[in-house]
Amino acid sequence: MKILQTVAHFSDEAVKEIMNSQTEIRAFKDWQIIYSVQTNRGKASEEFARMLGVSKTKILRVIQEYNKHGKNWRTYGQWGGRGNF
Image (cartoon, rainbow, N blue to C red):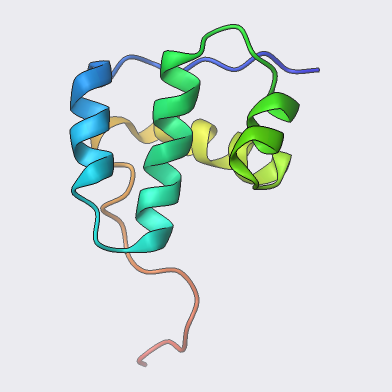
């Protein structure tokens, strides 16, 4: 059981504003995960996965990327698709 916590790159209100301003569903879900972990300290990844309806792996990956890359963790390129070579 892994207890999650985020590095405080943004305040809780700032994360909530960013989350609500998203137009893409994948980005909204990612920010929802960050907001949930940041505001509910001391819970395990299994609890967040059950609460948000996503896999435990998704929770861990999003939190790890957010903690590692900081404020611009979501600004790198798109996922998947064909490469334009």
